[in-house]
Image 1 (tube, rainbow, N blue to C red):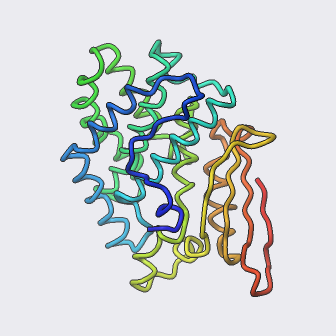
Image 2 (image 1 turned 90 degrees about the horizontal axis):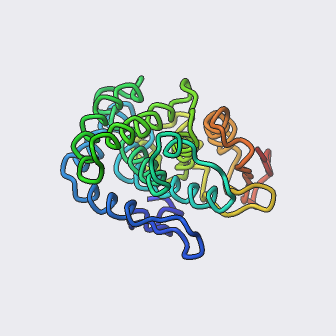
Length: 271
Protein backbone atom coordinates (compact mmCIF):
# COMPACT_ATOMS: atom_id res chain seq x y z
CA UNK A 1 0.00 0.00 0.00
CA UNK A 2 1.26 3.49 -0.79
CA UNK A 3 2.02 6.03 1.92
CA UNK A 4 -0.94 8.21 1.07
CA UNK A 5 -3.23 5.23 0.61
CA UNK A 6 -2.41 4.24 4.16
CA UNK A 7 -3.59 7.65 5.30
CA UNK A 8 -6.83 7.34 3.32
CA UNK A 9 -9.45 4.78 4.23
CA UNK A 10 -10.14 4.30 0.55
CA UNK A 11 -12.67 1.53 1.16
CA UNK A 12 -14.97 3.69 3.27
CA UNK A 13 -18.28 5.02 2.05
CA UNK A 14 -17.52 8.51 0.77
CA UNK A 15 -19.68 11.31 2.17
CA UNK A 16 -19.22 14.92 0.97
CA UNK A 17 -18.61 17.65 3.51
CA UNK A 18 -21.67 18.76 5.47
CA UNK A 19 -21.55 22.31 4.09
CA UNK A 20 -22.11 21.12 0.52
CA UNK A 21 -25.75 20.91 -0.43
CA UNK A 22 -25.74 18.12 -3.00
CA UNK A 23 -27.32 14.81 -1.99
CA UNK A 24 -25.35 11.64 -1.34
CA UNK A 25 -27.79 9.05 0.05
CA UNK A 26 -28.06 7.19 -3.26
CA UNK A 27 -24.27 7.15 -3.65
CA UNK A 28 -23.84 5.58 -0.23
CA UNK A 29 -26.51 2.98 -0.96
CA UNK A 30 -24.87 2.00 -4.25
CA UNK A 31 -21.40 1.81 -2.68
CA UNK A 32 -22.68 -0.40 0.11
CA UNK A 33 -24.38 -2.65 -2.43
CA UNK A 34 -21.37 -3.12 -4.72
CA UNK A 35 -18.90 -3.53 -1.85
CA UNK A 36 -20.36 -6.97 -1.06
CA UNK A 37 -20.98 -8.01 -4.67
CA UNK A 38 -19.21 -11.33 -5.33
CA UNK A 39 -18.89 -10.83 -9.09
CA UNK A 40 -17.31 -7.38 -8.78
CA UNK A 41 -14.95 -8.64 -6.07
CA UNK A 42 -13.85 -11.48 -8.35
CA UNK A 43 -13.23 -9.13 -11.27
CA UNK A 44 -11.13 -6.74 -9.16
CA UNK A 45 -8.91 -9.64 -8.11
CA UNK A 46 -8.76 -11.37 -11.51
CA UNK A 47 -8.02 -8.21 -13.51
CA UNK A 48 -4.63 -7.88 -11.81
CA UNK A 49 -3.29 -11.18 -13.16
CA UNK A 50 -2.62 -9.99 -16.72
CA UNK A 51 -1.39 -6.56 -15.59
CA UNK A 52 0.92 -7.54 -12.72
CA UNK A 53 1.62 -11.28 -12.74
CA UNK A 54 2.01 -11.68 -16.50
CA UNK A 55 3.12 -8.27 -17.73
CA UNK A 56 4.83 -7.00 -14.54
CA UNK A 57 2.91 -3.77 -14.83
CA UNK A 58 1.72 -1.54 -11.98
CA UNK A 59 -1.25 -2.53 -9.82
CA UNK A 60 -4.66 -2.55 -11.52
CA UNK A 61 -6.52 -4.58 -8.90
CA UNK A 62 -8.61 -3.96 -5.81
CA UNK A 63 -6.38 -1.33 -4.19
CA UNK A 64 -6.02 0.63 -7.42
CA UNK A 65 -9.79 0.70 -7.81
CA UNK A 66 -10.33 1.84 -4.21
CA UNK A 67 -7.84 4.68 -4.61
CA UNK A 68 -9.17 5.80 -8.02
CA UNK A 69 -12.76 5.76 -6.74
CA UNK A 70 -11.84 7.71 -3.63
CA UNK A 71 -9.95 10.33 -5.61
CA UNK A 72 -12.64 10.56 -8.26
CA UNK A 73 -15.20 11.33 -5.57
CA UNK A 74 -12.83 13.82 -3.95
CA UNK A 75 -12.45 15.53 -7.35
CA UNK A 76 -16.23 15.56 -7.69
CA UNK A 77 -16.61 17.14 -4.26
CA UNK A 78 -14.03 19.85 -4.99
CA UNK A 79 -15.36 20.60 -8.47
CA UNK A 80 -18.93 20.85 -7.18
CA UNK A 81 -17.73 23.23 -4.49
CA UNK A 82 -16.22 25.29 -7.31
CA UNK A 83 -19.57 25.38 -9.16
CA UNK A 84 -18.32 23.26 -12.05
CA UNK A 85 -21.21 21.92 -14.16
CA UNK A 86 -21.64 18.16 -14.48
CA UNK A 87 -23.49 17.66 -17.75
CA UNK A 88 -23.67 13.87 -17.99
CA UNK A 89 -26.55 13.18 -15.62
CA UNK A 90 -28.16 16.58 -16.28
CA UNK A 91 -28.42 16.17 -20.04
CA UNK A 92 -29.95 12.72 -19.58
CA UNK A 93 -32.64 14.14 -17.31
CA UNK A 94 -31.21 12.31 -14.29
CA UNK A 95 -30.96 13.69 -10.78
CA UNK A 96 -28.00 15.58 -9.36
CA UNK A 97 -27.49 12.67 -6.98
CA UNK A 98 -26.80 10.45 -9.98
CA UNK A 99 -23.65 12.36 -10.93
CA UNK A 100 -21.60 10.84 -8.13
CA UNK A 101 -23.16 7.40 -8.71
CA UNK A 102 -21.99 7.46 -12.34
CA UNK A 103 -18.51 8.41 -11.14
CA UNK A 104 -18.41 5.72 -8.45
CA UNK A 105 -19.60 2.95 -10.77
CA UNK A 106 -17.26 3.96 -13.60
CA UNK A 107 -14.29 4.13 -11.23
CA UNK A 108 -15.13 0.69 -9.89
CA UNK A 109 -15.50 -1.01 -13.27
CA UNK A 110 -13.15 0.91 -15.56
CA UNK A 111 -10.39 -1.72 -15.57
CA UNK A 112 -12.38 -4.99 -15.68
CA UNK A 113 -11.26 -5.45 -19.29
CA UNK A 114 -7.84 -6.41 -17.99
CA UNK A 115 -9.18 -9.94 -17.48
CA UNK A 116 -9.10 -10.21 -21.29
CA UNK A 117 -5.85 -8.33 -21.99
CA UNK A 118 -3.96 -5.27 -20.83
CA UNK A 119 -3.80 -3.98 -24.41
CA UNK A 120 -7.06 -2.26 -25.46
CA UNK A 121 -8.52 -3.08 -22.04
CA UNK A 122 -10.83 -0.04 -22.09
CA UNK A 123 -12.75 -1.56 -25.00
CA UNK A 124 -12.97 -4.97 -23.35
CA UNK A 125 -14.28 -3.29 -20.21
CA UNK A 126 -17.40 -2.06 -22.00
CA UNK A 127 -19.27 -5.37 -22.55
CA UNK A 128 -18.13 -6.80 -19.21
CA UNK A 129 -19.18 -3.69 -17.27
CA UNK A 130 -22.45 -3.52 -19.22
CA UNK A 131 -23.42 -6.98 -17.98
CA UNK A 132 -22.69 -5.97 -14.39
CA UNK A 133 -24.56 -2.68 -14.70
CA UNK A 134 -27.60 -4.41 -16.18
CA UNK A 135 -27.77 -6.51 -13.04
CA UNK A 136 -27.07 -3.77 -10.49
CA UNK A 137 -28.81 -0.65 -11.81
CA UNK A 138 -32.39 -2.05 -11.71
CA UNK A 139 -31.96 -2.30 -7.94
CA UNK A 140 -31.97 1.52 -7.85
CA UNK A 141 -33.55 2.76 -11.12
CA UNK A 142 -36.53 2.12 -13.38
CA UNK A 143 -36.01 0.79 -16.91
CA UNK A 144 -35.56 4.18 -18.60
CA UNK A 145 -33.13 5.55 -16.04
CA UNK A 146 -31.23 2.27 -16.03
CA UNK A 147 -30.53 2.77 -19.74
CA UNK A 148 -29.39 6.35 -19.17
CA UNK A 149 -27.20 5.49 -16.17
CA UNK A 150 -25.65 2.57 -18.04
CA UNK A 151 -24.84 4.75 -21.04
CA UNK A 152 -23.25 7.50 -18.97
CA UNK A 153 -21.23 5.05 -16.88
CA UNK A 154 -19.96 3.19 -19.94
CA UNK A 155 -19.02 6.49 -21.58
CA UNK A 156 -16.92 7.39 -18.52
CA UNK A 157 -15.29 3.96 -18.54
CA UNK A 158 -14.40 4.16 -22.23
CA UNK A 159 -12.99 7.68 -21.94
CA UNK A 160 -10.45 6.84 -19.24
CA UNK A 161 -8.49 5.71 -22.30
CA UNK A 162 -6.66 8.70 -23.78
CA UNK A 163 -7.62 7.74 -27.34
CA UNK A 164 -11.24 8.68 -26.56
CA UNK A 165 -12.46 12.21 -25.77
CA UNK A 166 -14.74 12.66 -22.73
CA UNK A 167 -18.01 14.39 -23.58
CA UNK A 168 -19.10 14.79 -19.95
CA UNK A 169 -17.56 16.17 -16.79
CA UNK A 170 -18.20 12.84 -15.08
CA UNK A 171 -16.07 11.09 -17.70
CA UNK A 172 -13.34 13.71 -17.36
CA UNK A 173 -13.18 13.06 -13.63
CA UNK A 174 -12.63 9.32 -14.20
CA UNK A 175 -9.92 10.01 -16.77
CA UNK A 176 -7.94 12.26 -14.40
CA UNK A 177 -8.56 10.21 -11.25
CA UNK A 178 -7.15 7.11 -12.94
CA UNK A 179 -3.80 8.87 -13.34
CA UNK A 180 -3.79 10.15 -9.75
CA UNK A 181 -3.00 6.69 -8.38
CA UNK A 182 0.71 7.02 -8.93
CA UNK A 183 2.50 6.56 -5.60
CA UNK A 184 5.23 4.01 -4.98
CA UNK A 185 2.87 1.47 -3.39
CA UNK A 186 1.28 0.86 -6.77
CA UNK A 187 4.52 -0.49 -8.22
CA UNK A 188 5.63 -2.45 -5.15
CA UNK A 189 4.88 -5.92 -6.56
CA UNK A 190 6.58 -5.54 -9.97
CA UNK A 191 9.51 -3.67 -8.35
CA UNK A 192 10.10 -6.38 -5.75
CA UNK A 193 9.95 -9.05 -8.44
CA UNK A 194 12.62 -7.30 -10.48
CA UNK A 195 10.57 -5.06 -12.75
CA UNK A 196 12.54 -1.95 -13.70
CA UNK A 197 10.43 -0.45 -16.48
CA UNK A 198 9.84 3.29 -16.58
CA UNK A 199 6.31 2.96 -15.14
CA UNK A 200 7.64 1.02 -12.15
CA UNK A 201 10.66 3.24 -11.52
CA UNK A 202 8.70 6.48 -11.88
CA UNK A 203 5.98 5.23 -9.49
CA UNK A 204 8.69 4.36 -6.96
CA UNK A 205 9.73 8.03 -7.04
CA UNK A 206 6.27 9.38 -6.08
CA UNK A 207 5.81 9.51 -2.32
CA UNK A 208 2.49 11.32 -1.95
CA UNK A 209 -0.44 12.79 -3.87
CA UNK A 210 -2.87 15.17 -2.17
CA UNK A 211 -6.02 16.91 -3.41
CA UNK A 212 -7.39 20.15 -2.02
CA UNK A 213 -9.27 23.26 -3.01
CA UNK A 214 -7.12 25.71 -4.95
CA UNK A 215 -6.89 29.48 -4.85
CA UNK A 216 -7.03 29.96 -8.64
CA UNK A 217 -8.78 26.71 -9.64
CA UNK A 218 -11.37 24.51 -7.90
CA UNK A 219 -8.78 21.73 -7.50
CA UNK A 220 -5.14 21.78 -6.50
CA UNK A 221 -3.20 18.51 -6.86
CA UNK A 222 0.15 18.41 -5.10
CA UNK A 223 2.59 15.60 -5.90
CA UNK A 224 5.69 14.89 -3.82
CA UNK A 225 8.50 12.97 -5.49
CA UNK A 226 11.88 11.84 -4.18
CA UNK A 227 13.81 11.90 -7.44
CA UNK A 228 13.52 13.04 -11.05
CA UNK A 229 12.17 9.69 -12.27
CA UNK A 230 8.78 10.85 -10.98
CA UNK A 231 8.65 13.36 -13.83
CA UNK A 232 7.51 10.55 -16.14
CA UNK A 233 4.38 9.96 -14.06
CA UNK A 234 3.57 13.67 -14.02
CA UNK A 235 4.60 14.91 -17.45
CA UNK A 236 3.83 11.83 -19.56
CA UNK A 237 0.97 10.00 -17.86
CA UNK A 238 -0.96 12.57 -15.79
CA UNK A 239 -0.48 15.34 -18.36
CA UNK A 240 -1.80 13.04 -21.09
CA UNK A 241 -4.88 12.21 -19.01
CA UNK A 242 -5.56 15.85 -18.15
CA UNK A 243 -5.29 16.90 -21.80
CA UNK A 244 -8.70 16.92 -23.49
CA UNK A 245 -10.38 15.80 -20.25
CA UNK A 246 -12.46 18.98 -20.20
CA UNK A 247 -10.95 19.81 -16.80
CA UNK A 248 -7.74 21.47 -17.92
CA UNK A 249 -8.85 24.86 -16.59
CA UNK A 250 -10.28 23.45 -13.36
CA UNK A 251 -7.29 21.50 -12.01
CA UNK A 252 -3.87 22.86 -11.11
CA UNK A 253 -1.09 20.30 -10.68
CA UNK A 254 2.17 21.00 -8.88
CA UNK A 255 4.92 18.38 -8.45
CA UNK A 256 7.71 19.00 -5.96
CA UNK A 257 11.02 17.18 -5.51
CA UNK A 258 11.26 16.73 -1.74
CA UNK A 259 14.67 15.03 -1.69
CA UNK A 260 17.08 17.48 -0.03
CA UNK A 261 20.00 15.05 0.24
CA UNK A 262 21.12 14.93 -3.39
CA UNK A 263 21.45 17.20 -6.39
CA UNK A 264 18.03 17.94 -7.78
CA UNK A 265 17.73 17.74 -11.55
CA UNK A 266 14.10 18.73 -11.20
CA UNK A 267 12.79 20.83 -8.31
CA UNK A 268 9.27 21.72 -9.41
CA UNK A 269 6.86 21.03 -12.25
CA UNK A 270 3.55 22.82 -12.69
CA UNK A 271 0.77 21.93 -15.13
